[in-house]
Amino acid sequence: MANMIAQINPMVLLAVLKLWDELTPDGTRIIYPKAAAQAIRCAFCRKVYVISMSWTIRPKTSITASKDQSMPTVASRNRGQAGALQQATIDRQTMAIRKLEQRIDEVDESGIIMFCSASDDIAAGETLLFCRKPNSIIRIGGVIQYGQRDPISADPDSISYYFPGNQVAEAWNPLRDASNVRYQGGSSVGKALAAGLASVVIHCAIMLRNGRPVASPQYPDAQALVEALRKTENVRLSFDSVFEVNDETEGWRKSKYLSVWALFGKAAEMESLRDYERWVCWLG
Image 1 (cartoon, rainbow, N blue to C red):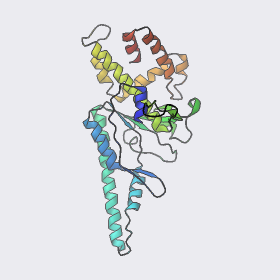
Image 2: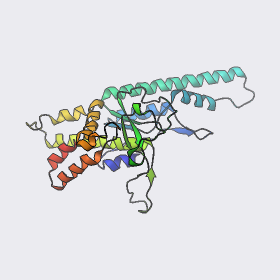
Image 3: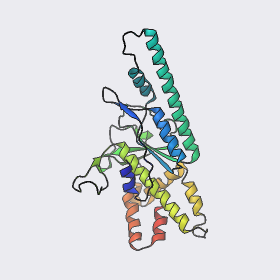
Image 4: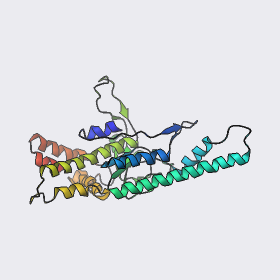
């Protein structure tokens, strides 16, 4: 997913964290709440601007799966010992989920923008992290060819925006054969693209601030713009502004699919004219 973020914003600085996970006998991937909490805490300590989370956790499933894995297999253990082990495992998982929720709250209060992907299983129901802070986490769903919503993804009402999530090509890798193009799919791909777009908006605001250290009538307070983008509602506003470029883009608002081609096409014209200040302001 880091590849997708960098594809949108080549100037981004990434802190890539891999979570501890396991596969159950039926092939289901389990993300442990404790590992998720540690990763979020690490990102918080690094003072990042954006956290992009490609995983979901179902609290009840996490507890049940871990409990099943911890069942005694030695025949000599009696039922009392097995019951005690089960309860201890459930208690540990409950505490881990509470710690994860605390970390989410901590990040929300710190001004870090959080993106999470929708579940690619419509039957999954509510999942962490989104259900903890639905108003503070931008939830991204994937779309298939021609911008249609993926029918198996989560409830559309719970999705903030939709981004490409079907057969999205990775950026070219000089260490790999140029003819061997890799494609990725799923809501997590759309989420990475959305996080990359958010980083572009923030990067443009920082460029404007650094280029205009002294307030001017045209740009009264560039620093205030950077600070404003530490709030989720303002990042949403920046995304929503894409719908207002022209009548064509407005038509995509209902589907929540950002028609970025209209915005960046105009920005590309400004860049070709070397009108860098207007280019930065247009993007920001």
